[in-house]
Image (cartoon, rainbow over all chains, first blue to last red):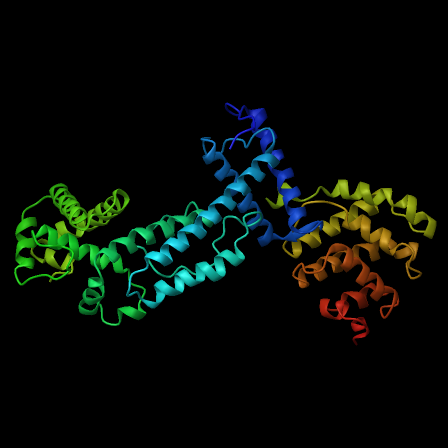
Length: 290
Length: 140
């Protein structure tokens, strides 16, 4: 985005003017939202204000400005540009939803489907990039293996969520349905439960790689648990992290994962390290190998 | 935020006082003190109903909309205006903001001159549904 003068830094006078400018911006935005009326319920007004704050923050980030910097000499223009950015995020979310649908694994649980349906049917129908850009008007019940922070919200959150779903889908696709057999063994009733499929499958794959076995089958041998125990025995947390990182890299090579897919798997493997280091002789359970 | 965006009562009072030029034709005027009281009553009603004002004009619009009512008298004009402003805030909130300011003021005026026969108390006893439904202001 360009075309707006960007201040170098606020003086006290500039900060005061920015505060007044924000109040005036809110008043104009509220009038537009209320179709010319002069008052709103306080909770609605707060949501409008939160949307303005988020939209200006989106504009700031896009322009490389620090959080809290005055919008610019023309806050209305900054807000309009921020709204355009939120529209772009919305369009990006549509593309990502299509990618998630195209890469969905053969076997999924009901909350997975319900979440994607809610994004399709609720989010895209209700999301308002102009007045309520910070809200996420849909139900996201299917958990990610690596949860997202709540901020940034709005369409940005949905984009981040769907990006991770696509990464998880591609990994599960490469397993050719083996994850369903794993889930049947490990999580009774999983098809109706909000349990992350990637987390279970990736842990098993990393465990198998740790044992020096083929990861893609998700089928541990009778010797797998003992090999994992041996691989992690006596390791510090730091060394456990290293061992899991190396195992994740082996899985990535075996399954021909892309760079982002490998990075996500590495992060997922790293998240297991504290439990694996603390589990001692029970470490195979951390990898669904017990 | 409430304090930041609530329109100053004295600015609203100034707008109300300017209405005297029009309302005086119907024998209705407000002293500066009465205008300020009415504006403050509106601000208090807004706050009481959990509303944020981001622009002025309702007290002025309501005064101009009602000034040619045959039921308004100078003696209780200020008091009636304050009561009407509070009723406006209640109706607005009950409507869940589905009715515009202008629509509400027009409906209040119809009810005030109709079944209320100039009684602000009667008007205040109506629900938004009774006010909004055609002939609904005849509700007992």
